[in-house]
Image 1 (cartoon, rainbow, N blue to C red):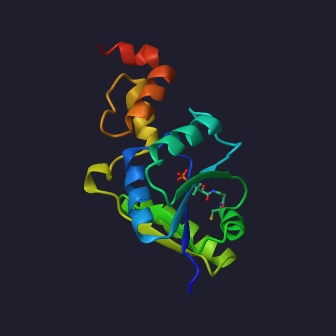
Image 2 (cartoon, helix red, strand yellow; image 1 turned 30 degrees about the vertical axis):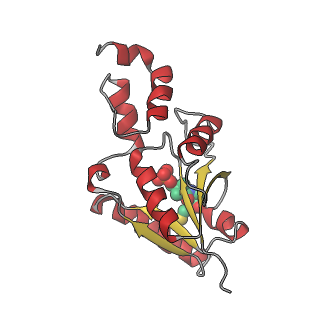
Length: 168
Ligand code: PNS
C-alpha cells in the first residue's frame, strides 16, 4: 500500500479569498490530505489575527473532509517534513506570480529535494484576485462580494465599518 500523499497549502490568508478556496478544492480532489498552513509571521502586521484567520479557514473548509487547517512558523520545508508532506501546493494566477514562486520552489527544493512544489491555476474569475487588493478595495468602500466567502465579508465589515458605510 502506498503512503497517502499529503500536500501543504501555505500562506498568510489575510484574509482567505475565493481564489484560495478554489485552489484548496482543486488540491483536495487530487491529494489524499491538504493541510492549509497559516504562517505566523511576526515581521508582518496582518489585518486579521492568527486566531481569526484560522477560525475563518476552519469554518469555510469544514465540508472538505480531507482538509485540515494548521499554523506554522519558521521554514516551510521544516514544517512540511514534520507533517510528512510530499507536496507544497501553490496557486499561480498570472505570469507576474511566476518569478517569486519559481524562486521559492527552487530554494525549498534545494533544502528538501524530496518535497515537490505543485502549482495549480485558479478559475479565471479569480486570476486578478489577491488578499491585499481585497483589503484595499474594502478600506476604500468598494464591494468585495463574490470575491471572498460571506464570512470574510462579515469580518471585514467589523474591521472596516467606517470606510464601508461611506458607500451606502
Ligand atoms: O500567501 P503568501 O504570503 O504569498 O505565502 C508566502 C509563504 C508563507 C508561502 C512564504 O512566505 C513562506 O513559505 N514562508 C515561510 C518561511 C520560509 O520557509 N521561507 C523560505 C521560502 S523559500
